[in-house]
Every structure is written in C-alpha cells, then in structure tokens.
Length: 440
Image (cartoon, rainbow, N blue to C red; front, side, top):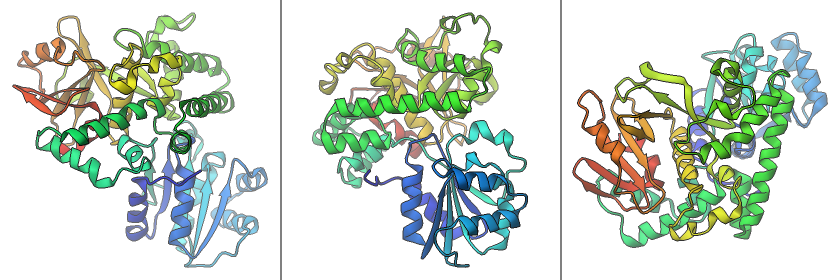
C-alpha cells in the first residue's frame, strides 16, 4: 500500500512540537489509514520506534490486559518490545488500543514520567470507551481521521496542491473557476464518487484505473465492518445493527433520503433501535445527518435525534453498493437517480472531515434543505445539493429565504456548476463543499 499524503500529519507535527507531556491518540474507523500514517510519522520523527498491533499480536494483547498498574504495564511493554527502549529517544506506538482499554487508563502516569513519547491508534473507541475507567483528559491530544477528502484524493491523483487551493480562492471571491480548472476538478470529482476516500480503494484506483478492482476493495471493507459488528456489538443488538447497515443504500436512494424505521422488521418506535443506530455512528462506519425543526441559530437546540439520514462513512462505498450500471453517464456529468444519494453522501463526508456537524431541515410548507451548516461564529449556511442539470430550480431554498424568522446567513446550491451568484443564491461546484469552513 502506497503512503498517501494526509492532512492529519500536520496535526501530528503540531503535537510533537507543542505537547511533550501528552500522548497522541489517533481515532477513526478501521482502514481509514491511521496505522500507515502513524508508522511513517513515527519512523521519520524518532530515532527509535517500538510498535505493537493489539489485533494482530494476541500474546501482547493478553499481556497488556493483565497489567495492574502503570508500572506493571511499562514492564510488560519492555518485555514485549523487539527493539531497545531508549529514554528520551524512543516512541512507543500501540495500534488498535481499544483491544486493551486499560492502556488508556494508565497512560496519564506513563506520560507524566516523560521517558517516552506515546502514539496510540483506536478504531472503535466510540463504542469501547465505556469500558475505560479513566480517560486521561489533559494528557492526550486526540486526532480524528476520516477517509481521504476530495482535496487529498486530488493529491493522490498527482494534482499539485496549489491547483485545488486556486479553486478555493475562486470560491471565496465568488469568481468562476477558469474553464480548464473547472473541467479538471469536475473530472476528478466524478471519479471520487466511484472510488471514495478509503486508502485501499484510492491506491487500487491509482494503480489500475479499474473500477472493478475498486469495487472489490469496497466489498472487502463492507465485509470487515459487518465482521466488526458481529465481534464488537452487544450480542442482543448485532442482528438489527447488521440489518440497518445493509439498509443504508436503499434508504439513501429513497425520496428525501430519510431513514425509515418501518424498513426494519418489527420496529415501529425509535426507542426500539436508538442504541443500534448509535453504535453504528459511534463506531464511525456510518454518518447520521440529523433533522432540525427550524433553520434557526443555534441549530443544536432544535435538533431531532430520532429523524435522520444515514450514509456510509465513505461515498465510494455507498456508490459501489449499487449495480455498476448506476455509474453510467457519471463521468460525463449525467448521474443516474441512485447517484443523487451518493452526491449527498459526499457532502456529508466532506463536512464531517472538516469537523462540521451534520444537519438538515424539512417541512411540508418549505420543503427540504439538504444540509444546514453552522459555523463557529454562529452563522448558518443552507445548502441544496443537486446531482443533475436542474440546479437552477430550488424551491425549498427559495421558500426558506422568504421566511424572516429563519437565520440563514448564506444560501448555496451545490451541483454540476461553476461558481456564480444570482441574487441571494450562490451556485458552486459540489466538490468545493470542503471550502465552506475556510470561507467562514
């Protein structure tokens, strides 16, 4: 697997320079590239690196689980190490730390000693943290990793980093992208919808330019996540969680995209499956976009956790859940109906990767606003996402802007279009949704 350039590495570098008395904890779903990036960073940054993989190395995992104190754990680390630990020069890397959650409990004391730098990765911490007695707040720098976002995908496809940033500047200035730039990024975006941002899929695409090989990677990833459900989810929840996971493609392709509880056998009320949905989102394998009762700041106040859209963590994995015929026309900007849900999944994925909460609004009177984005300063963007040529029609957005009580500071239509403004609507290429936070 080729090492892909990732934005998270800058966060690693900041931790190394500014947090000598903190461990680094890299979180995210399995197979988003945590271990590869951490290993490369550690070996580049330290003279000596000792690594443990608690999934692959069962004997080390069993030993760490038996630790009774920080001192005992450090002894066990030294016994299991295959290289010499050198105080002041060694980094200790522990992959898949959720397999021995007591390591995090003792981490505070090991970090305080200051002999070694600790780097940990965890894939299912959202559903295993409840088993940790004491997460050492103040002694850990946490970095969340996601699949490659669109900009990182462009880097993997050998596009110079300055090119995408040039497009972002056009967006910020509300100027059309030059035709050559718009065509190039649109072409890459259509490929991204099929490939997504999972590192194995990206590497397969870059190496082969073959979508069949990419779809095989996606099938393997789905099998991996279904296996994680079987292994890690509470026994009484597993079957329904699997059902929900498998229903995501059909629900994402339905009108309105909202996940219908009636699609789950023998379920009529949300409280019957609340923990099932929560497990999927906390495990990081699904993204929930929650409804709000009104587009009014602050959005959290009116958020409804029992009404939501649900997507896979990666748009490419969603796209490959449909027959390959769904891709027909996509490369030429003529997406099929199923791909409309994939466009929305892409937007959800980009917003999540940039640390933005996922919300939408719908009402019979107004219609549906596909996404509402609230920035740190409290301003709210209303987004409509269009996959076809009819992006100039946006009744819901027009209706919402006519209601004075709504606190919509900026209205955008994201679709197969260059940047242009028409009155109070800003039209922009959907592939630039990641620039919203830059622009705020």
